[in-house]
Amino acid sequence: MSIVLIALATAASGGFKLPHLPLPRLPKTIEIPDMSLSDVKVRKKRVAGWTLYVYKDSFTGVTSCRLYKSRIAYESGRVVFQFAPSTDTSRATYRVAGGPALTAVAPLDTFMTTNLARLDNPSQGRVVVPAAELVGAADVAIRPRYARKARTFKLKGLDKALTQADAKGCPR
Picture (tube, rainbow, N blue to C red):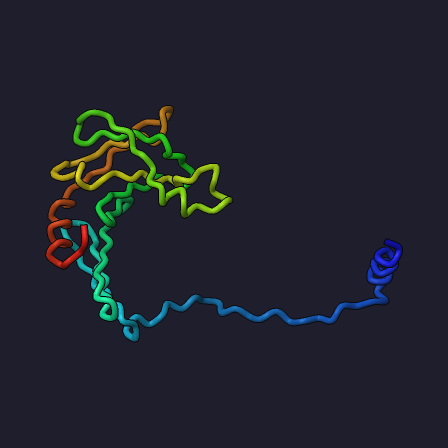
């Protein structure tokens, strides 16, 4: 212990100096990789107010898609509604087109992909609803928590956008 104290005292007095190693300089901007050199081709299309991205991997032959509009996104048979990330939506309820109130259950992958810093709010403001429940609906009202007011999301054009996604080979 006395050796540690002597070393600290020597370092504090300026008699002992650690070698200075310069830190590497990082670029000021982050460059997006050139997708033209990749095996994945990305196509973007606007359909009825929604934006459809179709990703076709020529190496594996897999097609994947992402469809979104404002704070709503469709992926793999489910629609994700986004509130503020600080909003805990783990006990959210929703009502499709004025129908009965249903409880939104957070999928397992939401909890599996959260890190330790987000354990207090693993939902990060997301409410997941199966797309099959929204077919033909004009809107969905979602109440993120019991003590909060419901917010209505307009679904205009979703059916047309999903039909277009099917035509492009997107999996449901």
